Image (cartoon, rainbow, N blue to C red):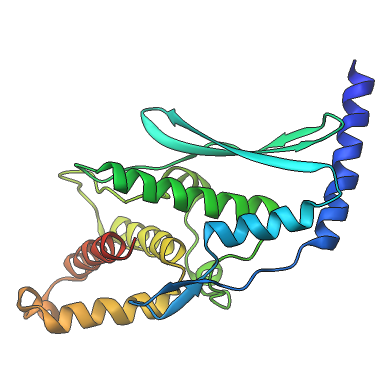
Length: 225
């Protein structure tokens, strides 16, 4: 039995090698007008994967389930001879009073993000290493907080906590909107400059500024998803 399973996986790995030779990175066919950036839509990712899988014996499905009370997505890769490989569950925290449309939007995002990562498709904007060099959200955050960020009520942060939290949210927003940190910061500055609620922003403490920027980033995601 184990010998057969091993042969199945060898067939799957060989097919994956063929797949990698066949894959053609798709054009970024999705537009985010607010950030003037482009990304590959879920349909574009699926098309690129399907075309590269042709004659390899590979196929895939994406399962949607509820994990720990949250909507989640898992990608399963299969070979016609029996080999199977699957990702972990990608859970999606929801904002308060989320509508069915919000849930659908997050699931679509998770499918695109996970399938692209699982199959090696470049679907988002290349930020020239900006996030990897400056912002390193831990793996648990990336896996568990790829949906709308929900801050904990009455959270007591010291300065370091606020900065680390800001970095996590920034990285997540860049991923979700298919843009880079510089573009998000420009959008934040625009909101601050145009809103009277931030007229004394320059005099705020660093922690207050970071928390305000986190709130603005959450609204940017809400408005552009």
